[in-house]
Image (cartoon, rainbow, N blue to C red; front, side, top):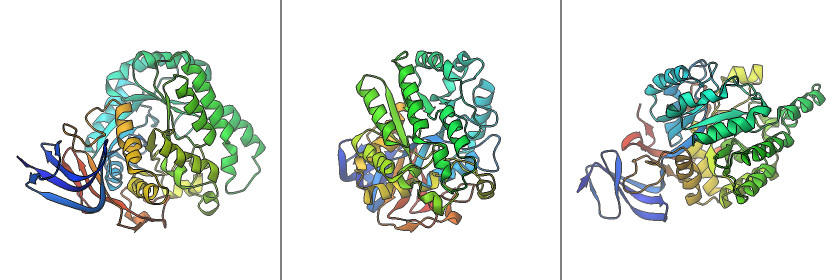
Amino acid sequence: MEHDLVLEGRVVTPGGILDTEIGVTEGLVKEVRRGLRGAKRIRTEGSLIFPGFVDMHVHLREPGWERKEDFRTGSAAAVHGGVTTVADMPNNPTPTDSPEALEAKARLARKAQVDVRFHGGIPRERPEALAKILPGVVGYKLYLSETTGAARFPEGEMPRVFRLVADRAKPLSIHCEDQGVIDRAREKLKDDARMDSYADARPPEAETRAVAAVVECLRGAPSLRANVCHASTAGTLSMVKNAAAGGLALSCEAALHHLYFTRRSMLENSMLRTNPPLRGEEDRQALVRGLKDGSVSFLVTDHAPHLRDEKLSEGLAGVPGLDDFAHVVSWLIRSQGVDPLRIAQVASSNPAEHLGLKDRGEIAPGRRADLAVVDLRAHEVARGDEVRSKCGWSPYEGAEFPGRARWVLRGGELLMDDFEQIS
């Protein structure tokens, strides 16, 4: 048969990296073998063909903060980074914790170039109302500390919420920072003007104490699949690994910025304030090892765009990341020695499975033709004026990366063709 499109090159499959061809017809991968015929052929020398990246932790800001980002610009940034599916978080000015709010957000997301799914918020006053948005969400999000657009959920309500979410058979992602630890640290550091003192105001203990509370609550809801968002410390990885070994369905994700930067980076760039903050080199290396050995299950951006002047004047926490997903993937492979097969797992198959998206995440016959071709010879310096995100800047500005996304397909449709983005 003649396919709509044939891609030829090094294909990252569940069974290994194969020098082969992918036949795409009617939006699906139909064949993976040599000798295919196609109406169009793309030869991807010097590249790796990954399943389209699935970023299960983004903040696309709409509705409410459209001046920072919206679904059109955020999805364009995703394409730029090789991401074909995103899961948006609920902490908008109007939280996504009701059918009305979810419907409004879904309408706005129709203009996105990539597939947008949603995490649901959990109403503080009536957590049982989370059932009302069950059909429209891929999971739920819980915040154990105050962060941008979200108030802390009462710790005493956690066991009940865990049981409620477990009963709905959807995963729960948790922002793990203990507010009491943060408040005490802030009081001690209120007169500290060091550039990186923000990291001390949200110390590693805040994260590990919150993770310990999560583990304890999971014992009362053992069927719940829980995910620790943006793990930043070696201690967190150890706790998650031990909990999983003990039979609890606990996993964790690592954000690009925690893998690439350390707290020393904050001395040079005041824009690198995040929640949780950047850690030391030992923690950064632990996260990279976690990607390699399976302790880290998901690679995410925690894409949190703020306008440049807001970051500088108000000290808001969060950095964009979607534009640079493929950049950091190329760096992890070339500079940090992460196996491309592990990248395909943590950036595609694991998040797709976790979110219940069974039609994507792997390159195999019958799966959606969501593909990200990363050229590992296309060295590029990250530049703020090249990002597609509306925020207009990148935390990686000035850094040289060994590769970038060259072709991106969503459902067989070319969104990026030989480095040129198709709008």
